[in-house]
Image (cartoon, rainbow, N blue to C red; front, side, top):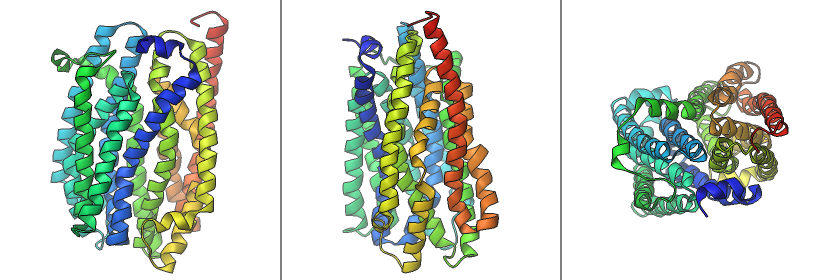
Amino acid sequence: MTKENMLGTRPIPRLLLQFGLPSVISMLVNSIYNLVDQIFIGQRVGYLGNAATNVTFPFVTTCLAISLMISVGTAANVGLNLGRKDQERADRTLGNGFCLAIIAGIVLLIIGQIFLVPLLKIFGATELVLPYAIDYARIYIIGIPFVSIGIMLNDEIRADGSPSYTMRSMLIGAVINIVFDYIFVFPLNMGVQGAAIATIMGQFVTMILGFVYLPRMKTLHFEKKNVKLEPVIVKDILLLGLSSFITQIAMLFMQIVLNRQAVKYGALSKYGAEIPLTVFGIVMKVNQIMTSIILGITTGSQPVFSYNYGARKYTRVRDLVKALILTTSVIGAIGTVCLQLFPQQIISIFGQENELYNEFAVMAIRNMTFLIFILGVQMTASVYFQAVGKPRGSVLISLSRQILFMIPLLFILPLFLGVKGVMFSFPGADIASVILCSILLFRELKDLNQKIASGEGA
């Protein structure tokens, strides 16, 4: 059975499992790269080393912003074109996306190396943290082209109907990262530099495995002639990928504000500047593990949304929206309970520090993550609008949590609550953004029901 028939006929729960599970694992592996670095660095170097990975993380976010704009935009257009039976346009879109990914990776590498130190200072590096951050980031940035191209290849392999291959390639890269993280950080005592080298080794292997798959594509055809950029196709890719870009860029600005507010208000508290800077970075990584599961499920459904919407199978589109909200809410609730019950055990993974550090870390985990279970609505809405070719809705959703709600709260709440106000900005933004997404998604479901009732599509 071809990919087209499978996406249009196979039961929604089965497709959700088939595409969602590999995507979840892929997302988790992507999150684990930096998390593993922090674990090994925390155990060997200490919390200043972990703070260095925290202030370097905006580089990761910037890379993801541009890479996901290209890869998700390409995958969404590929799916819509396959649903419309336009094979030629789908193949040309694939080639154009690949070319854009290469250009983006090289440009980011050059900019990162030239402006490394001033950028790290903007990202919140203190004088104590800056030397560690330079050592880590200088090496990490070398791997940015591997990340850009690897993300592009994996998203298109998923769109080609092989999510399990994407999962395996990322798992192999993660295992390599973990193994060499241990070797470089502990036996060879290479510190943050060793962790950075291990990370780019894993990313390189994942990229190579993506290249290996290209000649075996089933529903798509990768040809050199399609790598030549076409303005119309590039525009379509960037338009549908815009919300992913905005989501990550919004995350970038939020990270910068978060780091700077942590230093500012931490210095005014008994905890000092470096403890909040380190802990907030760790909580963000832990939070990312949980949200990666939810995001993996919703992102994995993107080809299913795109194909069925393009084929005018609106009943299946509506059923998938409902299934996603239910599934992600249940998983989010389980994750929330775990984070609330075991904060000390979780924070201890990143190294044992003094009592003041542990006190702040436990408080931060509990206060910043207790509303994770409602984020499935936002992520479902964002992927839906992106996948069906409605970028305006997706852009609004992407802006909502980080820009419209989170950043203002990061400035307002600390004025009254000090460093604790930084923590409460997270659940505050969660509530506001989910209300907005629920309204937008309800309107869209109403429109789908009207199309179904009128006999338009199926």
